[in-house]
Image 1 (cartoon, rainbow, N blue to C red):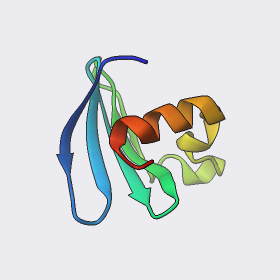
Image 2 (image 1 turned 60 degrees about the vertical axis):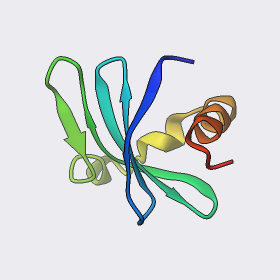
Image 3 (image 1 turned 135 degrees about the vertical axis):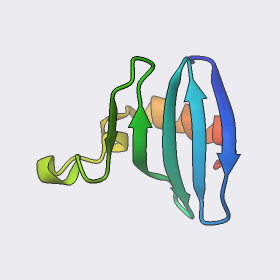
Image 4 (image 1 turned 90 degrees about the horizontal axis):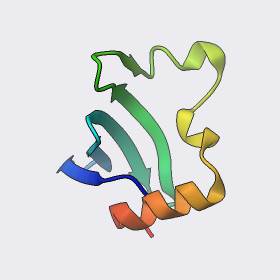
Length: 78
């Protein structure tokens, strides 16, 4: 797993992460990892919920089961 640092947590289940220069804001609910709210790349690119719905894809749905479980464990959502 890549080097992951939790930058901030909110009471609403939002977790902001830094992963090797990428910043992601993830939503964690009672069932675990729910969705990615936004992402900023190390090179300055960004995307958010406004960008993904038109394609009908939640980026967290593209994770393998193993990747999802490892990420949830690292976030304490296990």
